[in-house]
Image (cartoon, rainbow, N blue to C red; front, side):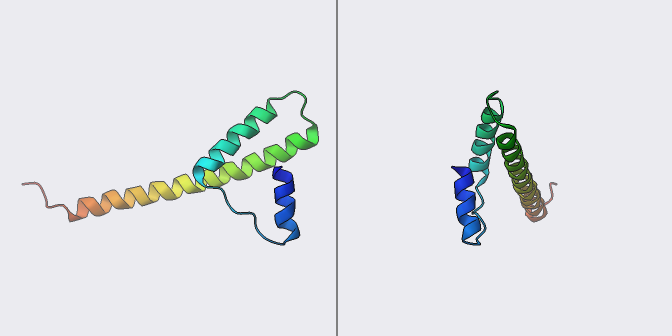
Length: 85
């Protein structure tokens, strides 16, 4: 199904919508399960690995952005708090 969905967006010359973080993790778990299947063809395995690598990159970018945002929030909070006497 994922391949047909990707083809649909490709035919419409559109970028497939990006999954949110939790959806990406769920899809990564599905990919791992499929890759553990010994009946998987080489071609399908390669496609799944490519998709998994892309999802991993997206998740890492989202985590990095979240970490930066959280760090900034803590820094802002510390700079607005009165100094301890």
